Length: 215
Image 1 (cartoon, rainbow, N blue to C red):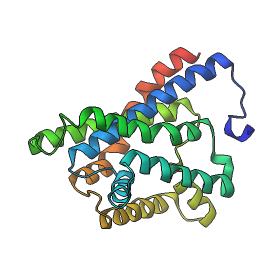
Image 2 (cartoon, rainbow, N blue to C red):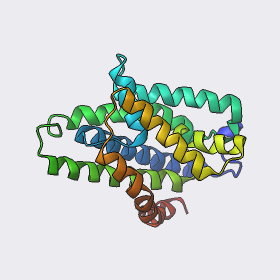
Image 3 (tube, helix red, strand yellow):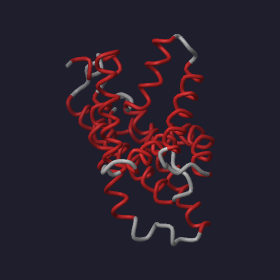
Image 4 (cartoon, helix red, strand yellow):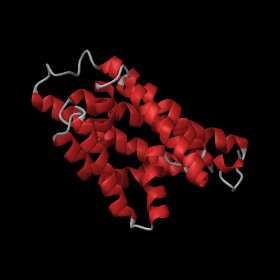
Protein backbone atom coordinates (compact mmCIF):
# COMPACT_ATOMS: atom_id res chain seq x y z
CA UNK A 1 0.00 0.00 0.00
CA UNK A 2 2.95 2.35 -0.47
CA UNK A 3 1.07 4.20 -3.22
CA UNK A 4 -1.15 5.71 -0.51
CA UNK A 5 1.74 7.59 1.03
CA UNK A 6 3.91 10.31 -0.41
CA UNK A 7 7.18 8.98 -1.77
CA UNK A 8 8.97 11.71 0.16
CA UNK A 9 9.11 10.18 3.62
CA UNK A 10 8.30 12.45 6.53
CA UNK A 11 8.61 11.94 10.27
CA UNK A 12 5.78 10.34 12.23
CA UNK A 13 5.27 13.61 14.10
CA UNK A 14 4.86 15.62 10.91
CA UNK A 15 2.59 12.98 9.42
CA UNK A 16 0.42 13.05 12.56
CA UNK A 17 0.13 16.83 12.35
CA UNK A 18 -0.72 16.63 8.65
CA UNK A 19 -3.41 14.03 9.36
CA UNK A 20 -4.86 16.30 12.05
CA UNK A 21 -5.13 19.19 9.58
CA UNK A 22 -6.45 16.82 6.91
CA UNK A 23 -9.29 15.71 9.20
CA UNK A 24 -9.92 19.34 10.18
CA UNK A 25 -10.21 20.29 6.52
CA UNK A 26 -12.57 17.40 5.75
CA UNK A 27 -14.75 18.34 8.73
CA UNK A 28 -15.02 21.89 7.39
CA UNK A 29 -15.99 20.59 3.93
CA UNK A 30 -18.66 18.37 5.50
CA UNK A 31 -20.11 21.21 7.59
CA UNK A 32 -20.08 23.58 4.61
CA UNK A 33 -21.83 21.02 2.41
CA UNK A 34 -24.49 20.48 5.10
CA UNK A 35 -25.16 24.23 5.29
CA UNK A 36 -25.51 24.31 1.51
CA UNK A 37 -28.08 21.53 1.59
CA UNK A 38 -30.01 22.94 4.56
CA UNK A 39 -30.23 26.40 2.99
CA UNK A 40 -32.29 24.79 0.22
CA UNK A 41 -31.38 27.45 -2.34
CA UNK A 42 -29.25 25.13 -4.47
CA UNK A 43 -26.47 22.77 -3.44
CA UNK A 44 -22.94 22.44 -4.76
CA UNK A 45 -22.80 20.22 -7.89
CA UNK A 46 -21.77 16.98 -6.13
CA UNK A 47 -24.45 17.32 -3.46
CA UNK A 48 -27.18 18.05 -6.02
CA UNK A 49 -26.32 14.54 -7.22
CA UNK A 50 -26.31 13.22 -3.63
CA UNK A 51 -29.72 14.76 -2.96
CA UNK A 52 -31.05 13.06 -6.08
CA UNK A 53 -29.77 9.67 -4.94
CA UNK A 54 -31.15 10.25 -1.45
CA UNK A 55 -34.59 11.07 -2.88
CA UNK A 56 -34.81 7.68 -4.59
CA UNK A 57 -33.24 5.45 -1.94
CA UNK A 58 -33.28 4.95 1.82
CA UNK A 59 -29.87 6.62 2.03
CA UNK A 60 -29.25 9.93 3.75
CA UNK A 61 -27.30 12.54 1.81
CA UNK A 62 -24.19 11.69 3.84
CA UNK A 63 -24.64 7.97 3.21
CA UNK A 64 -25.08 8.65 -0.51
CA UNK A 65 -21.86 10.67 -0.41
CA UNK A 66 -20.00 7.79 1.23
CA UNK A 67 -21.43 5.23 -1.21
CA UNK A 68 -20.57 7.21 -4.34
CA UNK A 69 -17.14 8.14 -2.95
CA UNK A 70 -16.44 4.46 -2.30
CA UNK A 71 -17.54 3.52 -5.82
CA UNK A 72 -15.33 6.27 -7.29
CA UNK A 73 -12.49 5.07 -5.03
CA UNK A 74 -12.76 1.51 -6.36
CA UNK A 75 -12.79 2.74 -9.97
CA UNK A 76 -9.71 4.86 -9.30
CA UNK A 77 -8.01 1.96 -7.54
CA UNK A 78 -8.35 -0.33 -10.55
CA UNK A 79 -7.81 2.29 -13.28
CA UNK A 80 -5.13 4.61 -11.90
CA UNK A 81 -4.28 3.91 -8.28
CA UNK A 82 -1.34 6.33 -8.35
CA UNK A 83 -3.82 9.07 -7.42
CA UNK A 84 -4.87 7.34 -4.20
CA UNK A 85 -3.20 8.65 -1.09
CA UNK A 86 -3.99 8.87 2.59
CA UNK A 87 -6.28 11.87 2.18
CA UNK A 88 -8.29 10.01 -0.45
CA UNK A 89 -8.93 7.14 1.96
CA UNK A 90 -9.81 9.43 4.87
CA UNK A 91 -12.27 11.43 2.76
CA UNK A 92 -14.28 8.32 1.87
CA UNK A 93 -15.00 7.63 5.54
CA UNK A 94 -15.20 11.16 6.99
CA UNK A 95 -17.12 13.41 4.61
CA UNK A 96 -20.41 11.47 4.48
CA UNK A 97 -20.82 11.00 8.25
CA UNK A 98 -19.77 14.63 8.83
CA UNK A 99 -22.45 15.89 6.44
CA UNK A 100 -25.12 13.84 8.22
CA UNK A 101 -23.91 14.90 11.67
CA UNK A 102 -23.87 18.59 10.71
CA UNK A 103 -27.33 18.33 9.16
CA UNK A 104 -28.65 16.70 12.33
CA UNK A 105 -27.13 19.43 14.51
CA UNK A 106 -28.15 22.44 12.39
CA UNK A 107 -31.48 21.33 10.89
CA UNK A 108 -33.56 22.56 13.89
CA UNK A 109 -32.38 26.14 13.27
CA UNK A 110 -31.56 26.11 9.53
CA UNK A 111 -34.57 25.04 7.51
CA UNK A 112 -37.24 26.33 5.12
CA UNK A 113 -38.85 28.33 7.93
CA UNK A 114 -35.94 30.77 7.81
CA UNK A 115 -36.44 33.89 5.67
CA UNK A 116 -34.98 33.55 2.19
CA UNK A 117 -32.35 36.19 2.93
CA UNK A 118 -31.11 34.20 5.94
CA UNK A 119 -30.91 31.05 3.85
CA UNK A 120 -28.83 32.93 1.27
CA UNK A 121 -26.48 34.04 4.06
CA UNK A 122 -26.30 30.43 5.31
CA UNK A 123 -25.40 29.27 1.80
CA UNK A 124 -22.64 31.89 1.54
CA UNK A 125 -21.25 30.86 4.92
CA UNK A 126 -21.28 27.25 3.73
CA UNK A 127 -19.42 28.24 0.56
CA UNK A 128 -16.71 29.94 2.63
CA UNK A 129 -16.40 26.97 4.98
CA UNK A 130 -16.06 24.53 2.07
CA UNK A 131 -13.42 26.72 0.42
CA UNK A 132 -11.43 26.93 3.64
CA UNK A 133 -11.63 23.16 4.10
CA UNK A 134 -10.50 22.50 0.53
CA UNK A 135 -7.56 24.88 0.99
CA UNK A 136 -6.49 23.06 4.15
CA UNK A 137 -6.78 19.63 2.51
CA UNK A 138 -4.78 20.85 -0.48
CA UNK A 139 -2.04 22.36 1.67
CA UNK A 140 -1.44 19.21 3.74
CA UNK A 141 -0.66 17.50 0.41
CA UNK A 142 -1.97 14.07 1.38
CA UNK A 143 -4.13 13.52 -1.69
CA UNK A 144 -7.43 14.56 -3.27
CA UNK A 145 -10.96 13.37 -2.61
CA UNK A 146 -12.30 10.77 -5.09
CA UNK A 147 -14.73 13.25 -6.68
CA UNK A 148 -11.85 15.52 -7.71
CA UNK A 149 -9.62 12.65 -8.79
CA UNK A 150 -12.25 11.40 -11.25
CA UNK A 151 -11.96 14.53 -13.39
CA UNK A 152 -8.16 14.44 -13.31
CA UNK A 153 -8.11 10.75 -14.20
CA UNK A 154 -10.63 11.11 -17.04
CA UNK A 155 -8.64 14.02 -18.50
CA UNK A 156 -5.46 11.95 -18.34
CA UNK A 157 -6.99 8.89 -19.97
CA UNK A 158 -8.94 10.74 -22.69
CA UNK A 159 -6.26 13.40 -23.37
CA UNK A 160 -8.92 16.12 -23.25
CA UNK A 161 -8.13 19.42 -21.51
CA UNK A 162 -8.85 19.21 -17.79
CA UNK A 163 -11.04 22.32 -17.67
CA UNK A 164 -13.46 20.90 -20.26
CA UNK A 165 -13.53 17.51 -18.56
CA UNK A 166 -14.27 19.16 -15.20
CA UNK A 167 -17.02 21.35 -16.64
CA UNK A 168 -18.60 18.36 -18.40
CA UNK A 169 -18.32 16.24 -15.26
CA UNK A 170 -19.89 18.88 -12.99
CA UNK A 171 -22.68 19.69 -15.44
CA UNK A 172 -23.43 15.97 -15.88
CA UNK A 173 -23.79 15.22 -12.18
CA UNK A 174 -25.87 18.39 -11.66
CA UNK A 175 -28.25 17.45 -14.48
CA UNK A 176 -28.57 13.86 -13.24
CA UNK A 177 -29.07 15.03 -9.67
CA UNK A 178 -31.63 17.66 -10.69
CA UNK A 179 -33.62 15.12 -12.73
CA UNK A 180 -33.66 12.91 -9.62
CA UNK A 181 -34.98 15.74 -7.46
CA UNK A 182 -31.79 17.39 -6.25
CA UNK A 183 -32.01 21.13 -5.58
CA UNK A 184 -30.47 23.27 -8.31
CA UNK A 185 -30.62 27.00 -7.69
CA UNK A 186 -28.76 30.19 -6.97
CA UNK A 187 -26.54 28.34 -4.48
CA UNK A 188 -25.31 26.01 -7.22
CA UNK A 189 -24.39 28.97 -9.41
CA UNK A 190 -22.75 30.85 -6.52
CA UNK A 191 -20.72 27.74 -5.69
CA UNK A 192 -19.50 27.47 -9.28
CA UNK A 193 -18.50 31.15 -9.39
CA UNK A 194 -17.13 31.77 -5.89
CA UNK A 195 -15.55 28.54 -4.67
CA UNK A 196 -12.42 28.84 -6.84
CA UNK A 197 -11.59 32.42 -5.83
CA UNK A 198 -12.36 31.67 -2.18
CA UNK A 199 -10.04 28.65 -2.19
CA UNK A 200 -7.34 30.85 -3.68
CA UNK A 201 -7.97 33.41 -0.91
CA UNK A 202 -7.73 30.81 1.87
CA UNK A 203 -4.71 28.97 0.42
CA UNK A 204 -1.96 31.26 1.80
CA UNK A 205 -3.82 31.72 5.10
CA UNK A 206 -4.14 28.00 5.79
CA UNK A 207 -0.65 27.29 4.47
CA UNK A 208 0.83 29.78 6.95
CA UNK A 209 -0.61 27.93 9.95
CA UNK A 210 0.00 24.44 8.64
CA UNK A 211 3.62 25.25 7.82
CA UNK A 212 4.05 26.73 11.29
CA UNK A 213 3.32 23.36 12.91
CA UNK A 214 5.05 20.99 10.51
CA UNK A 215 8.39 22.80 10.14
